[in-house]
Amino acid sequence: MPIIPLNYTGLSSVNAIGSINESGNTSFGFCASFPVSFSSDKDYVNIIGECTESIKRQLSLTVVSGSCLVYWMKNETELFLINQKKLDEGYELKDNDLDKLGITIKAVNTPCEIFIVLRWNNDLDFYLFNGEELMIKPQVRLLLGTGNNYVNRNVNDFDSGSYQYLINLNKLKNSDENRTGYKLFDIFSFYPGKNITFNVTIDSTAINNYQANSIAVQLFDPIDIGEALFDIANDVINLELNNISNSFVGQLTRNALYKVVTNNSVIISPDFSRHTGRFVAINTNTGMYDTCIIKSYEPNTIDTFNGGTFTLTGGF
Image 1 (cartoon, rainbow, N blue to C red):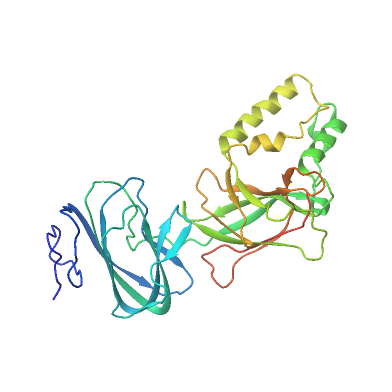
Image 2 (cartoon, rainbow, N blue to C red; image 1 turned 120 degrees about the horizontal axis):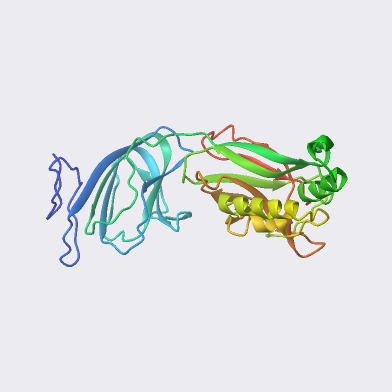
């Protein structure tokens, strides 16, 4: 039969294995208990979210079947193993002061089932796994073709000055080095706010003009895009057709979500506002950041609920 923790104020059906050694006289007024089942050993699943304020949280975790790795989570993306070895069936883990940290679990041997008991002392909001999280496969499309993929506008779209319009558009949209690929990507299918890990490689057959360790991802803020449209409209009204600032695209991304590519991968969390973006890197020829040209994107065929691989051309 279940053993109820000392001073527990929740349902008597909670299965907290063993006794818990509490420090001080903390009173826990909030509680939750739930099972978590894993059918795949590929996914990292957030079980308990981080808390923005200091809080007394007490965790009991029991491995009912299979085995798993358990991590403390910090800053949403940093994971730290609680135990260097995998936790096997029957293992009982207790953390009497989880505080602000979150908990992430990865199954090692499946099927795997975990039972969680959590108590806390303050009425603060934080994520708790509910067992009904949607599984949405991330899907990506590439946009703004360059080089051989560049599509010129129809000159009949313009009332006058079509020649200069096409020159300006080519300067803005095409590759500076005439690399064939794409400037932008759009994650059009995703679970909002959920971390997606993408692999990032550079075409080994091309000249690489990226400064080492300078590649990053930017997801655009749609408000900045709207402001840029007003700037364009102002130029059209004032007939300033011969100049497009070299920093125009930079203005679009000044408030973008920015993530550095580390060890050939990047973790990003798209949402309904920010899901379209670009890769940037420092150009070894100019010492300035510029838009990387994307050669291709390959979906993840092994772990279909995670990101695939972007291949960059090595140029701008």
